[in-house]
Amino acid sequence: MKIALIADSYRPETGGPSEILKETKSALKKKNIKISIFTNDEFKKKNYLLKKKIEKFDICHLYGVWTFFHIKTFLIAYSLKKKIIIHPLGYFEPWSLNQKRIKKKIALKIYQSRFLFKSNLIHCASKLEEKNILKLGKSLKTKVMPYGILNKFIKKKIEKKKINKKAIFFSRIHKKKGIENLINAWMKVNNSHWCLDIYGPVEDKKYLQQLKLSIKKNDNIRILNPIYDTNKKFKIFEKYDFMILPTFSENFGFIILESLARGLPVLTTKNTPWDDIKKKNLGWISSNSKLSLIKILKKIFYVSKKDNNYFYVKSKNAISYAHNFGWNLVSKQYVNVYKKLLNE
Image (cartoon, rainbow, N blue to C red; front, side, top):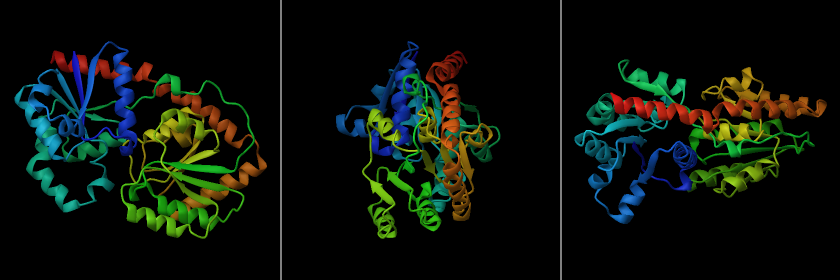
């Protein structure tokens, strides 16, 4: 069984998708699966024949949609009668579909819907993503397979520590991530004892400048350079009390899983598939409004001042919960799906 994980890019600047591809490959190799990653970046650089590359694999697992590279790869794989799995990476979530809406409607009508229906399977990272994809067609063949995290990255234990009064945002600097809401809410709460650090790769430099201007007179908010090394990232996490991702849309939210695995409670929104954060006491769930964020931040600051164990309990719960997503367990789902697909 030979599997190709195919993506437009594998660069660290893409954020979560790069980590997901890397960890998926690493985990499945341990299951004796012959697996490779190839991308449009590599294709352009090495100038190989795409058809000869695809011929080597039994299953083409495409990460992403829309681009010319995905179109070309799908058509070649289909002509070679390869098994095709499409993982949309959240591009069919309502928020994403509303961006460049007319172009996407045209693309859906001309080719993208056909690709979805002609694929052997659509890989959904969460039940939320599956629900939104099935709006495009109830007969689409879908399978929910969450992302995993390498078990070596799940913290062994959590110790009680002094509250640092620091929160972290760690994701792409993108309008989808709700950073403006976060900055506005943080400044409105006006708690001079707490600091917010924002890390992430930048796609739009003008947007970054807007954010920097908005925090110009606030010493408690910093926008810092992105961190791409996983070990360095997790070491930085140790300095913070909780992570905030006030996103408008996530098909999964890999950074949420990484944060929980390191014992970092998470404040995120109801537009992620992480209802368990509230149910299992791993953090807090907000609506996408600034007022909701303000209310929750005030509660966090007030309760943590009175209760020294406020973050510790959530941290302990988070690490225990993250084991459900360890690749030792999750990889079995992938292997079973691949085997079943090849036997059809």
